[in-house]
Image: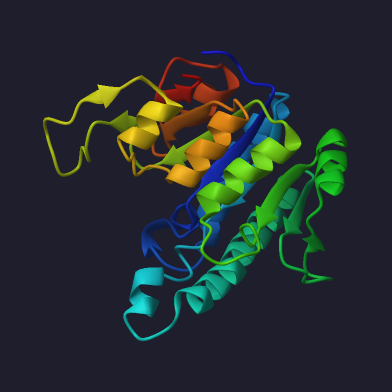
Length: 237
């Protein structure tokens, strides 16, 4: 597997919650920032999209009568909170970082533009994208694929709780088969739940490989910095 020069790392918000599972655990945020600093210092251009599942669980809110668009609006703000926590932790370990939000909220975070993102990356910043796409009904997976396409990045790394893609959920089915590689069309046809169909389609249209790996693997940083053969790679048909 090649060592990519520029990546967009897609994370779930839960990685910042630690054992609390909800909210922010700043010991976990700090530890994660140190991992990201190692990737950045290896010379890899790094940008990040992080979800907001540690701040709000959409299914729970919907069950109490909120509308989908309303829940997504709250979720967008949750992603910005996560992005800011990560930014400040990166700064504390000596890494330049900035948050660009798809929804205007100056002076807390700059409004996203492609030109500003490219300028920040070129000047050595880690760029964290908040508020998804800025619109309801689009997941942060889709936001990650969109930003990777807009910026012409080499790879979208989906860091998740399993070590790649399986034929079915390995936590529920012991006979699940591990798939070390897959085409975009294969991922879409199988309805692979690790990332949504719209995100896979965007990556296919823009020829961006999707590298799925476990965030719980103690070697996950070295897997990225050394381009190790691990996880699942989804690439051109």
